[in-house]
Length: 276
Image (cartoon, rainbow, N blue to C red; front, side, top):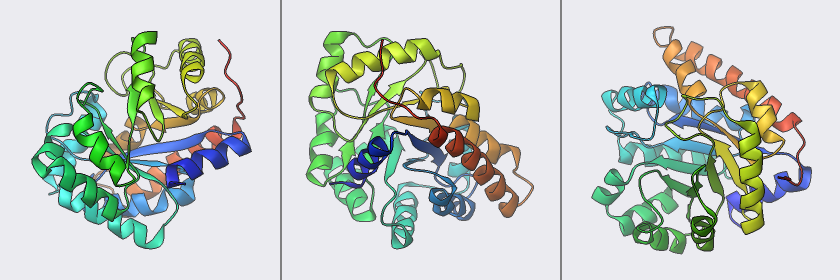
């Protein structure tokens, strides 16, 4: 079994959801970013989404956009992101890492080469925001040949016919976008998410995480009762931004404190079968 499959199977057996924090690689600099990354598992992270900095992150709200800008100004790039994962893997062989970002840098790298390189670095999955299912074969096939899952999105506007197409060749887990819009700008409509997840579970056995609007431990706990995973990004990168100028140790401490609080609420919420 892959690290993702093993993790979600264990959590399912335990009756709890995964806490999935998102950070942008290189934000606010490579050293501080790695210091956060390496400590996230001990703070409760079950899966880590690591953002690949990009100059035009169109699906992201102001907080995540700003984190990409900071990372790029600090010299982050794809090669450094992969080196960060390689370094992480030297000490942590168990925690899944999913790279999240946009297709342009992957296309420039070359999809077959990219698939080989991310697998060699120890990456478990890819989330490519602007690569629709109609066009994702170019990356999905070489990635899956290397044992790397390409995570697909389900959104509030996904109808039953499209959902069937999404799950047909999906792997790893599904990512349910809880709000129509960009990351971190709206609150999660819990009842709508509950109904959507019931529909997803009727179509597939794949785990389904929820993200794009969860900012507080209370929101994380509420979603953890109905989802297989809770993704938090904007609140975490905002904590980074709010402590810039206070030094590396302060940034790391503040981010990890927030992560522990979010993980605690996520893990405390027991969940089972979702009903519409």
